[in-house]
Image (cartoon, rainbow, N blue to C red; front, side, top):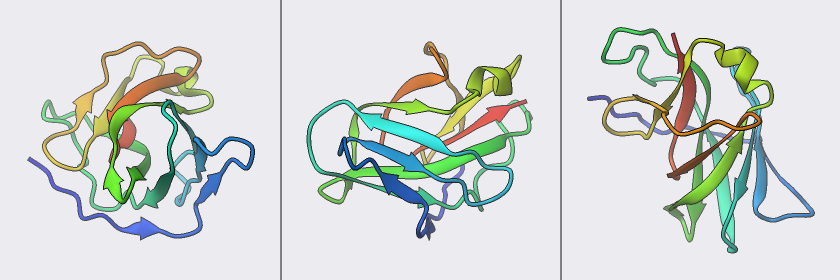
Length: 134
């Protein structure tokens, strides 16, 4: 079971000026990808770009993980536990025959099994890392 030490990367979050529930989390390293987040419920949210350093490198089945991004979504300084959409432009072509991998910060990374539509998928945990394997 892996546990990640959370390191905030400053200056990588852009809040949408026209919609306070939309954010862009910019990549920090060359292998990472920019992602878009849209929270479904009204409220005041904050997002943070987290480092991908220290994330698990392999799934339990031995599959190598390639991380796309790592971030946090909070409401009142607490990680949310509610639906929000994540869009990774070009995700379908990036995955091809690979599977989307999620890591919630504790436990083990897991394969995302819900539908991915137009490069967008739904999460509820406010502290995920997103990648692919193999």
